[in-house]
Length: 274
Length: 276
Image (cartoon, rainbow over all chains, first blue to last red; front, side, top):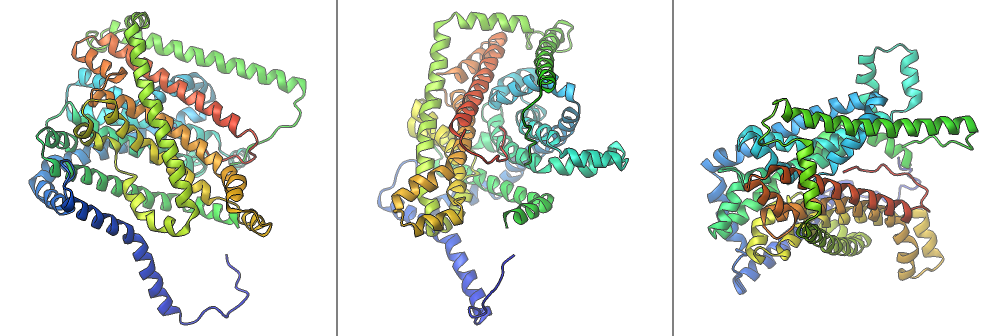
């Protein structure tokens, strides 16, 4: 909330809006453009063995990923990633609620959960490859087992930190436990849960790539390593670029969802700040 | 985040609190024991194939054998060396760049999109590139470790530097503090909690990537030993080494939490912490 005490500084609002948009765009694409130009000049003046020029990279990108490869390699990877993330979120929030609301259960499981969270997720791969074979299910399981912990632990934290006055109010108003979960515990824990989901997303993406690196014959991760082993440098870079784009897309989707889910929370924060 | 602060606790409250701590420790131990028993029973009863899923006792025996092996400790040392070097490089780079960029509004706006594009790139995507550039060496692992943990520190410090209280900043200006002393006395204390959070997250991420690099690049260390043991069909050793990596992760978490608490004992605010 801003208080305007003077009206002197508001001439021609429309032209300023356009100037503002222009300025923002310049800031947004300025540095990337400069970097690409420098990169292009660098690549033509002093071509490095492992660094293709931007033009070569773009050409390789279109040739490699636009077409059948998109359906045979990219989509299955993304599907496994999506399924893995959804299962992680459902299991993480469900189990987190259960553990967070039962004190003895929480105290019983906490040390083990701390340990499992600390295990670097990629070491799960050799274990699950042996147990389940190099199947799609194995890859999804690895993604879930690796990325469920931040969500699970943050949900437990969030449920535990539910405001006690509100819990008691809900009790005295005789809310059923289902209602309490839906209207009190879940919203109260949601900022924490979203923080957990954000971490899980990056772990899931790492595991999606890794699960295809050593024990697979298709998928994005496999393709990138294949290109590298065959010295298809521009193609390899195009794969890295694609993974970057997927990362950005994932972050954008998360940002969108988070803004919707936590609109009330950001609102409160803003009011507190003012 | 609101926390209830208790005043001077009367004796009864204190004793009941001690009881609660005891109960917590007891239940925690019971949980660990229960986990070990379940683990022992699963292969013994044939729920999972005992050839591929060794019992807890077999795994612990393999772990004991590793502890007596000097090569195991060398591998722990190699993994922790890669972790340490990577973390230091990432922290210094991240903190310095974030301070410079954070303090100059022009740079901040100009780098925003570039940062938002580079940050989500999964560092494992760079493994092939690192292998091409450095082969199966430590440097290749460092590329991955530094790239991953750099962003943790960078983003936190960037937020931290921006968090300087407007009133405090204006006060410092009107009292004529020089730029250098503003950075030392105002920006640094403000950004320190963020730096510590970033450091703790970066330490956890660096361990993950150090072991991942060893598994998939093949530079010597615990990760490579896991892959070797798995291809040799020596599954108890695989599980034992996985436990070792988990314990390392746990120790790193505990140490950095303690460092954070020590370094910020003066700090009043209680910020929502992200847990990794």
